[in-house]
Amino acid sequence: MRFYKSESGKNVAREELFDLDEEGQAALADLFTRYEHGLERPGEVKAVVGRPLLEFRTQVRGVQYRAYFFKDGPKYVIVAHCVHKNQRKARTSDLDLAESRMKAWRARGGK
Image (tube, rainbow, N blue to C red):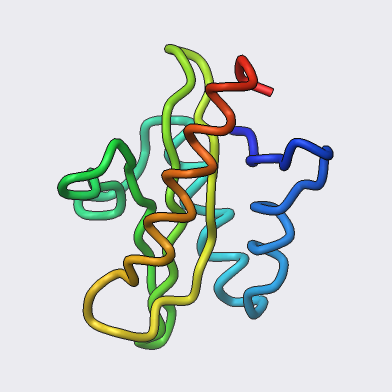
């Protein structure tokens, strides 16, 4: 599991994860670990409809958290954007940001 870094090297996706409350951080970190071992539960990882992205989905006490990601070859998963989801549908701006980060990552050759 890797986190998206900006062109300047700033680890923005990891910082977004750490900006979430502790319960959200812990829930997503647990899901990341289980995913790496093939132990995710049904519904926790889904394709984002109409986008070349996937999402980690978790909730704690009714609060939903999402981490949008993409695969970089067969070995790596790149977390592009982490959010606290406070509405029914994903915000277009969050999806646009995750997708633009994916495109930037790939344009830089996976760096």
